[in-house]
Image (cartoon, rainbow over all chains, first blue to last red; front, top):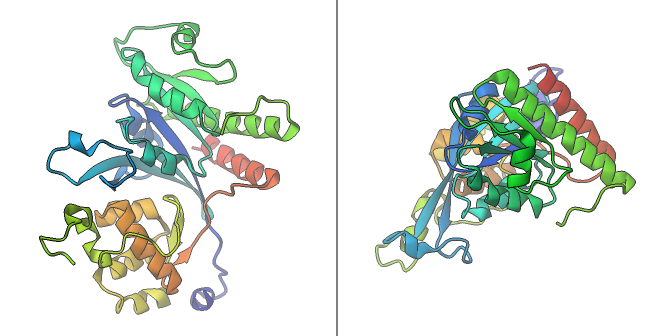
Length: 206
Length: 120
């Protein structure tokens, strides 16, 4: 854009890169809490309208009298530099909205699957989803007050989490704890990228 | 358009502000950042209410498509159609989402994100 560059005297507009990390997990597991713990803005909500013509991604008969279904996603933002912004997107709670997950993970750095140890079974669908996508992810056990404590190995076994997937404990309300989760996602993404480059890692099914 | 007997009924109603268009002129990732210059903001005054609001937001601060959709309380797909129009018309500049190919480019981005997180 020609006029953009001449607008502010002397300042060449910088190309801004945006990256995103996806936070997945069952309904009410604390995804928005996690996003809010590190976001510089109050988590925002964006909605996607799905039409019943959506190629069988949803069963419109479950929503009587409606031709559309609205899917909400919460997200936050961390401005890291004037040319780098990280966005954190929570997946829609209902795992039947896969069409929206596909859009969310496209181009993502990686993902964290948040697990509530009181409802471990809620994590099966998100874990299955990421296992079948070409996206590095880790599992974060959200340690609620009063929730049953399990050893990480017990959870790994219960959820059949592959050995190459990191599993960490966290408190989604605590900024430091959430930062550790996000650092873990990026470090795992780097390790995966290096392994792919050197061919020393089992190929992920795309 | 918009007649009650329209066989598409509810399906198109959220898209009234795009005059029924549901396909954007170009695909824009949900996290892609948009910027409006002051000159573009002036021009956008004549582009209609919704596009002007987008220009105001993007002139004040770089905003992603997701943020615009949230602030305008519009479905993502509606904002995407409007934003794609504005990019095509030179009212917004589209900034890049993360590189999807190239080992060095991807690793460089991961390193920058990692260092940004550690500074939190």
